Image (cartoon, rainbow, N blue to C red; front, top):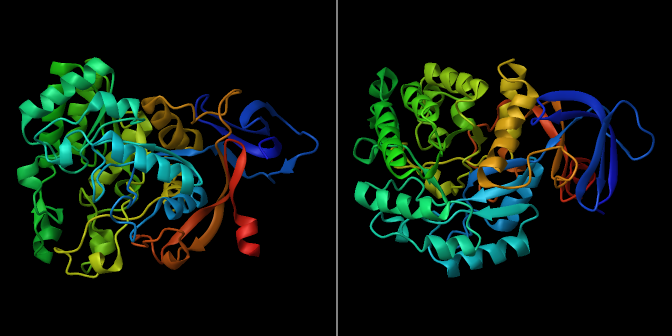
Length: 427
């Protein structure tokens, strides 16, 4: 069913920057109209929040090659349960997504198995090895929405500049991972007193600034469209601000883990808190929240990275990096709302509207004509998160056992219900 009337809802409109009690009508899988005040009939939302579905840039799915960690079916279920209606997937799979044939396989699998929309990114260089450019034009034709080598930073600036120049000629978006690869190699935590006390290999926050400034210099030279996947340190923000002030086509994201956790959460070598880049100091976390509030950082993402138990149940230095985040992205982001750091329209601007705009997608809005990709949630429901209740195949979440506040009640994709918490509880 792609026609419905949703009434008595708090409409969170990130485009208008408003929050109001009203109703929304879906027709043919699209938003037909919205209005304020009471409305008879339809589905009573009982005052819950209704917002555009989340567009999550940088989701890792294990197909092809690591299906035991996450499949499109399980990732789609987790996304729907987390209010994510569009997954923008990374190409850093066991078989990198660096040819049109692999991209077409991934697209077909996603269409068959995922209950939400999937928009794939493709590798920038063959094998993500930083030596030879992929067939960017053919990959664009096959459906790639952006190009990235993920955390495999291209060290050769000549190769990267050629990739950027070619991407610029095609209007393609490049997603960079700002790190100086030499300094960050082998690092498990951020440098400082805590890292020294724990005896763990560390990286200075300056590595992020150096990597970003290198990338931005090449962006200035080539005028390519560029998105930094994660900015996590205060020292990198001035360079980002200068690039935007100079009129470069640059945006930046930050993961929910870097907005809500800090370096001390590693505690006694808790490997579920090992992510890339590593968690930062509290001063950096607060600076990232302020940067999102001011619009300097445009996008909040989950950087969903499933890892199996064998990869995490290792000494901290040897454990794999990454955390699942599709299902915890919204409740973790609501911590910022409850702390009065961000209001809901501002939060969904970074979760939905800005990523959709950056990728040229239709979603992220409540305007008539927009696709009915929606999430209904109650921001006030308290609970303790149990990782074994997550829908992901891997359950490596740093929020296990933590008090959370906010639950997704229902999720729609093109007007069709893909998740209903009431039905799930009844089953």
